[in-house]
Length: 233
Figure 1 (cartoon, one colour):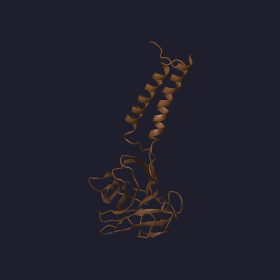
Figure 2 (tube, rainbow, N blue to C red; figure 1 turned 60 degrees about the vertical axis):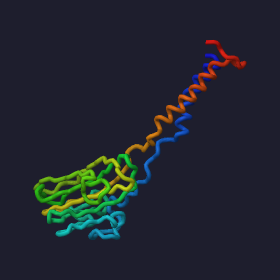
Figure 3 (cartoon, helix red, strand yellow; figure 1 turned 45 degrees about the horizontal axis):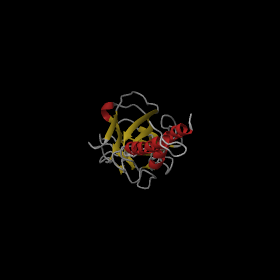
């Protein structure tokens, strides 16, 4: 291969690399700011404003409120792992609620994983557990809402559930809402993880523009001889 053609072969890939370098790599999502998903901080007791991570976003049911953090004891009243877990037991068909406001990137997807169980019989007609993601603490038409209801004559062992949500604001709220007239709904080991990275919307056309410009320079170099004369084509 002639020196000029070798230059061309090297410059074209370098054009795309330079374009990528100037635009910058995909922007990693900012720290989500989710804390105490295992309920290990704060000890047992009713949910209070001082509860790390959860304190600012509590919504006791207007009647029959009964939710908090419990210390693991004997099965089935145990944590999925660790020493503490959250429970919901409000019995008046009105949910108790807790949540956290997150640092989110609009359009970014987030994986929410948690473990859920019950410590006794449950009936779908008198129990409800909801996972809510969006701009509101309480479920609304602006939010993504996932409902869980089941009927069982015995306690249900912990099961892992993973959901994917897309952020609609820079401070979306993840919240959990629940009541069960006959038993406790148990919640433990919640995690929130961004999926992939957020890429600026202008990246594709900027890459194409810069790559095209640099490729034009490469063609010009190819058409020149080492002595500076233009090749006839």
